[in-house]
Figure 1 (cartoon, rainbow, N blue to C red):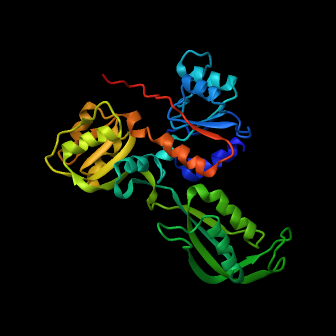
Figure 2 (cartoon, rainbow, N blue to C red):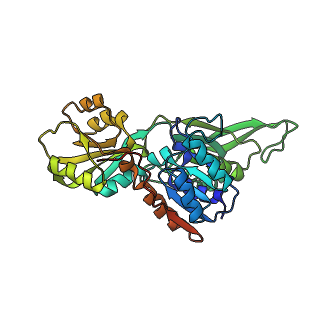
Length: 364
């Protein structure tokens, strides 16, 4: 199996199209056509990670965080980022980063946090905009159902818990073929009228190339008339953070001690207690201060995230408890998720869970 085939599996879990604009995801080091000897999955890629990959005979590292985040102008080993990249290249080790693509995935980072807390009735906290597109095309009436089935097969027409969704309108299409045309219907130089069906169908944007290929491969017209638009509808299956409920409400002190144990953190920094039980819990792995207001509006009793600054704790405004469990701690189970997923998809070489703790923050 080549690296590009592994990437195809990862794209099904977390399409790179849904990574945040500021992020740097994908294959950062290496050639996608390289044969894979083994995969090492880690949260961060450090020099010790490269050493681990060498020792365990893995030539592909799948890292949650990207080792290269900003532009690098020199490769002289003056900092840890440059040293990692240089060492990886020397030893023919490729590095793939998944980061915010997995943050935004329904079965990604935040769902993993919910799994650890055994939350029920989960849903995305901040659904992502501009991820749903609509295709409008026109096809001869007798070909409409055949084309529609091919578009469904390509991944179009799914809305929430429903699939095979479309809207069909019958009408009359007109066209005239020029002398350079090779029409499948009608004659050159003559205006032709054809009974057609207008197909309207939505699809997730990461499937656009596949859907357009299905359209062109299965449409009989030489020139296919079609329109694509981006919808403002929010995508309930893609987005940052997640909110759910505890099976049974808990005292707030007991709950804070519970998350300290579950996420194996040295401490939980939190805002003022409110004197009421915890039932509804919002989570966002990594730096999640931007979602405080969203957690409030969703009615969360507590919002678990990381990297909160001093003044941001005031934003709780006695409406919920803010709980900072640490950046590494909030994302630590992500590598387990990736390993579990890939082992179900790939069985012909080793997929290794890194045993290195890459947390740069220590507690005393």
